[in-house]
Length: 448
Image (cartoon, rainbow, N blue to C red):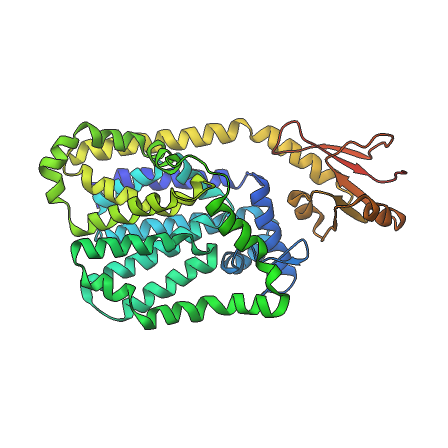
């Protein structure tokens, strides 16, 4: 511990600076605003059923919302709801770091190296201060994986149930994205003849536990609201992205390379030594990391619509494998020194990029916050705005047809729209904080 005390301090000092910086961040995107609105509405409504703009929200499972509720409650007491919701991501990442420390058998050097490799990924580090379910999802996956490794070492049945428990928690946080790990683990088990992993993967009671934890939520939603409540989840999030919009097959491999470019290049420089020496010196655990991410990325590459954040849950496996592989090719001092420098540079890049646009973003959001007609009856025409919903703190009907718009007008409603309407004078003209050139108009009194 003493040998790496300075490096350990640098790592946590940088994360602490990011934590302090996040206190001053407004909502950074409509995705963040939507998640906050869901937590906010659920806090004031029915705990068991998350809602968005007054409607039951079943597009994503409820676990992230449920876990975020106490953070929102504490934040509400201090008028800092946004900052306290960011803590869910911070704490999730810190706990992922602890799991990596456990997977590295409490070897501080190997843990720091893996963490530096992981956090030199610009995309991965940028999620540490985001209000998003990805960090929590990653944490649950890493815990379930840790219990998989514990079962391999000890053969204790309790670790099978703990694996499926946290695998279910991951599903209830984000859905079935992590199911790509199952064929990856299976392939590894067959190649290395790992009977323990096969025993875990084909454990009937484990899958029964998983089903008991996951299915009640979906059965409840179906019985109470009908099958249409899952339309977006099944047809947009799953089927739509599997078959629609054929992005290039190599997109995910490209994203993987870009996020770990310095380390992959280091590996490629001495790849001949790896095949001569490292290929046979890597442990079974290291190869388990390798198959966990490489086969999952390969399978994901067959999907149609691709989003690079879908890879984030695999990044810890990438970092763990790369750290083990490079230790066979380079000295500890060189790797840790390089990791420290790249980590600091990545932090500075994130800080500068975010800080450079912060003043303008805060100005636009403050303009919206100060001018929203909170006491008036309002509707959205054609398109809703989750940022407005957050500051209005009430549900706002979304009207799609002109006839319906007229009906609400006759009942004294004003309306928000992104369309400038001829012959009408808007009461408010608000610049969109996230999409430059986009304008939101508010028409309080109008005629057709």
